[in-house]
Each structure stands twice: as C-alpha cells, then as structure tokens.
Image (cartoon, rainbow, N blue to C red; front, side, top):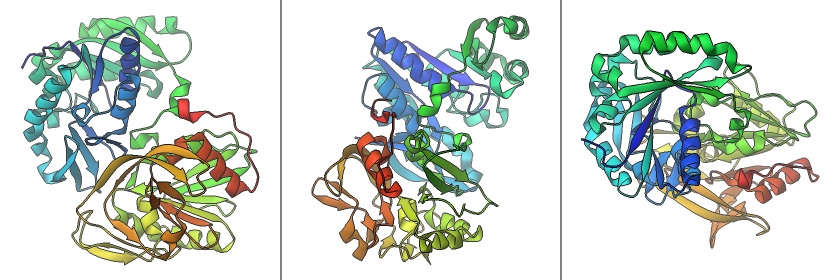
Amino acid sequence: MSCATPAIMILGTGSNVGKSLLVAGLCRLFANRGLRVRPFKPQNMSNNAAATAGGEIGRAQALQARAARVDPHPDMNPVLLKPEGEQGSQIILQGRVAGRLTSRDFARRGDFLPRVLESFERLGREADLVIVEGAGSPAETNLRARDIANLGFARAADVPAVLIGDIDRGGVIASLVGTHAVLDPADRAMIRAFAINRFRGDVGLFGPGLATIAAATGWPSLGVVPWFASASRLPAEDGLDIRSGRRPGARLRIAVPVLPGIANFDDLDPLKLEENVDLEMIGPGRPLPGDADLVILPGSKTTLRDLAALRHEGWDIDILAHRRRGGHVLGLCGGYQMLGRVVRDPLGLEGPAGEAPGLGLLDVETSLDADKTVREVDFSDSAGAARGRAYEIHLGRTAGGDTARAPFHVGDRAEGAASPDGRVVGSYLHGAFASDAVRSRWLARIAGVDLPSTLRYDDA
C-alpha cells in the first residue's frame, strides 16, 4: 500500500519518551499553517480512553485531535487494547468492543492490520497530512512478525519514520544506536532521521552525542527538543505517568489509592494542578494517610479485581476509618461501583464471572452487562450552578436509594449518587473536574471555604 496523503511516523526508543506530545505539537504546528492535519495511532494499549461520537479511542489521540482543531474519531486509533490484568486485554476495534485478547494469542494483533489500513486510508482522504504515532519501541524484535504498531505498519502503508530518543531517562545514545543495530535492513530503511527529546541545559554540550549517533546509524539528526515542563498539564496516557508530588501548605489533602486496573486517571490532572490541593497517589504497601480530607477511588478496568486488591492492601479499613472521622469519599466510574453494597459481573465481562460486596458506603448496587456506555455529555451540578463537558465509558448499571441525591444532571437525567450527609459521592462522569466552575465549587464544599485559584483548566 502506498499512502496517497503525505504522512510521517513518530517512533520512540521506548514507552514514555514523549511521542504523544510531539505528535500533538506537530498537529498544532501544521494546523496553524492552514493544513488539514490528522493524528493516527495504529494500535494503542491504555486504560485511559476517550469517548467520541463513534466510540472509544486512546486519550492521547483525543488530545492530538484537539491540537489539530478537529473532532476525535475512531479512525484515529483503530485498535485500542485495554488491559484487564496480566493475562489479557479487551479489544476496541474502530471504536467498538470486539472481544478479548489473551497474552497467549497476542500475535493475533496482526489480524487487525486490514482494519488499521482501512482507517488510515479513510482518514487520509480528508487530510493534507497524517502524523502517525508508534507504540513502545520498534526494537522489540520478538513481536515484529505480527507488528501493526510500529515498522510493521510503516512498511505496509509506506510511511517514513523519525526515531525519538529520550535523553532525560539516560542512555539515549545507546538506545538509538541499539535500535539501529537490531532492526533488519528493510525496517531500518524506513527510519529517515532521529531526534532527541526532553533535553535540559545547554544543547551545545550534546553536539558530540549527535555526531556519534549519526555516525553509527547513518541517520541525520533533526535536532534536540528542550524539556517542556508544562506538559504536566496535559492528559497522561501511559501508566508510567501516574505520579504525584507533595505540596506543602496546601489547604486540602487528597489521597488516591493506585489499584492494578486504574483507568482514566487523567480525571485527577486538574486537581493535581490546583495550588491549594495536595494530591498524593498511594501505591501498594502504604496506608492511606489519616489526615486526608478526601479519598478518591478512580476508574477501573477490572472492578472486582481491583476491589479485591483494595481489600488486600487494607485500604478498605482505611477508607471506612476515614469516613468515620468525617472525611469525604469520591468514587469515579469503577470507584463509584466499589462504594456500593455489591458489584455483580454475571457474564464475566471483566474477568471470572462472580460478585463481591462493595464498601457499603452508598446505598446502590451495580450489575455489569454487555451494553457498554460510551458517550460525551454536557452536564451540570445538582444545583445547576456549574456546568461542563464530560464523558462516560463504562459497563453496567447502578441503582439504589442514594441515586435520589445525584450530584450531577445530564439533561433531564440524574447522574450519580450521594450519601444522606453528602460526604460520600459516586459518579460515572469522567472529566468533570476539567470544568473550572465545577471543580471550584466541589473543592470549596470539601474545604468549607472558597479556595483561591488561578488555574484555568478549561482552556488548557
């Protein structure tokens, strides 16, 4: 296949080297020059998904579409694999659930190449330029035979590539030269140049490094991209981006337990950026802090599995103690389901069929079913005083007495649930805190006073 529309592919020497952000930046650059530019990622593996009018795609591709000033579309990420533990992933094919892929038959990914090329060709018909993002590293030679994410796609679609190395993590010379060394000649020929990302300090000091890479590979250098601190304001896609830093002097402390199947954790990004909020991600082996004002249970791709993990860590005891002390608890999507009396998965949609008692902090019950909800919505808070744009991606239905005190409304529909005293709240809405008005009112309610904020996330 030869690409009728000009395209370039951005590959990386590994995961989390900055490919997604570079593609977003290029999309905005060329859009500003008047080109119809479209982002594309053949295959993504992430539980941070975005809802579009046609189904689910990776969150990074939704951000890249925004950078290109176009609406996101499933063709921008035709294969999305959503991990459901260490043994398999849910397959989202051109926006829709298409089964499950176990680790044993992972080579089946190659079967999706015709659909990937179909989406790529369709996307190119409405574009002057397509910027393609690779996944992980093209040097994973054990996966090359059925690769659709990196040079397997590049060769099938005849798209030239640029290889990106991340100098911040160290070993950038070896990672670029090593990638060149393990590629076969035909794959190697698809890479036309390299670039260095995330450089801090005097670029002139790395001149000899660029010369070493160019001499060893034969690839020309496109230059060095400096460290971009403001990237922390953008939604993260990779699990490697789950991090937090203490903020001494903050008025509110929020604790978030990091469960194995955590999903859509970019819900937390606007809260992390608030100067009066200290949001800490709590990893395995650590208790939830006793002085937290709010505990957030984020989204989960495997609710029953994560509920078991939460109990294994003893976090259920910490949360119940936090509640008895008068603390606030918020559950988002899968976290909302965990707060109820029971979670049922009779069809085994997220793992082995079964059910488990929830934390019992909300008078609701959840049953998972095969009808997956994927949609963007306009919403308001229960008082109608603050509005925003959010999205839903979830299996199952949640019902019970506490839904009578829903925290949000989507049109005429009440959404979510709250305890009688309002200190425990659950919602299926993702991205609600990206609304400055909603976030401000919520934090003021937790703190008991208005909190000064200069953050304008709506326009970030």
